Image 1 (cartoon, rainbow, N blue to C red):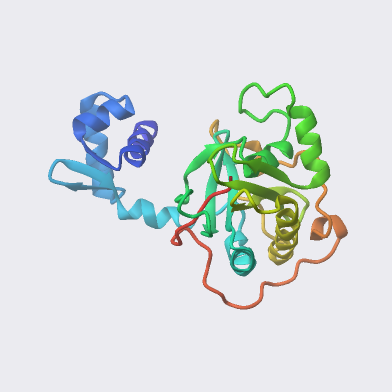
Image 2 (cartoon, rainbow, N blue to C red):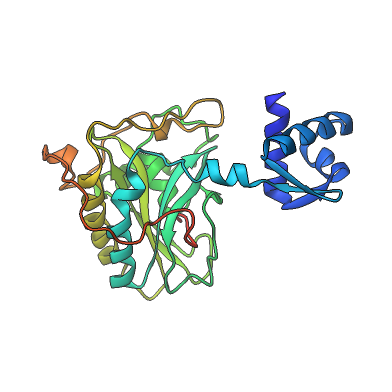
Length: 278
């Protein structure tokens, strides 16, 4: 029953809105089962119906806004991410691994925003810069299928440099640098990336990202625990420590106590036109 309900919600995510017949086909459910589940979801506010057309309900939106990959991450990232975007002009985003792909969590649009008009929850191949950082530091049993023959060497380079790069590999006119966000116990909890036009110096951008990542890591609550990622669709990289990565200056690496977040700038949340990691 729950599996069928989620199949319908995922179908609505893909199509936006549709009638019963289309949703049954999209979700792979018998029409009678789809109708019964849609009626139940509508009664719960998870789905809305207008005439014979269904769409995602406000309750799903409200519940989804509370999720983040690590408790306190969005609050800690708000100021540093916005300042980095303002000082560099880059589109800056935070991403996590889900279902073997990089998924947007939050961000601030920049000068390449028209080329990457993305939204929180949008999925991208793990071969983007943000995905590479996460996969390079994940446990070896990450369920994303066969890896390229050169990946072992590339992953070693990423861990040594503490950053990954994307040179127009996904979108023409957009290059990207990404670094890991480190939790208080030294685990990689997400990636921080910046997207810019090809003319920009990615090495310098990676240095700016590293400084920002240190600020975010220092502001994370030490007592918090990562949000558990369970089930076959979840990525172990979200909650399990992988190979060590060189991130000089992070609290976990240097043994410093995380500082409390200061100031009260506008939050970097899923309500902002966010852009995920590349």
